[in-house]
Length: 128
Image (tube, rainbow, N blue to C red; front, side, top):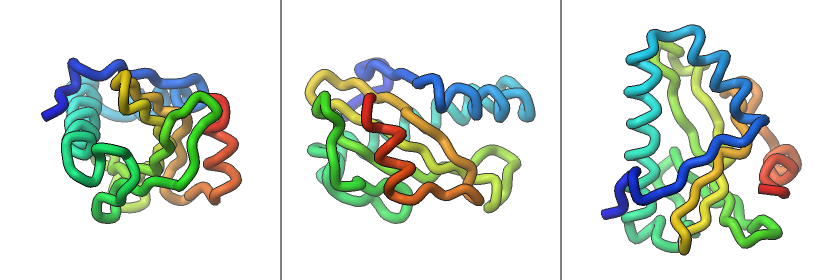
């Protein structure tokens, strides 16, 4: 089982702004608990048969988008709920996973109501 400590986690600038906004709206301990839960959720995916090569779906929450970055990262669209945000407060995360070196980059984040199309998603992860 892959653990969060085995992975290098990185939040890129486009995602950092929305995370900063979310952090300001919820209690710090709730934010930290949710961040830990997201890391654990992704580790469970990477440890599963579906996530070993980052090429299979995991329910409705993790979907490979079928392309790689120029640096070989595999792109995943991840659905995630924000504590106290309700259904409309959910997020869509553009994640680039480098399976070999165990490196995860959160390239971009959208609120559920702003669900990105494929071109927005590919643009967000292109240089990650």
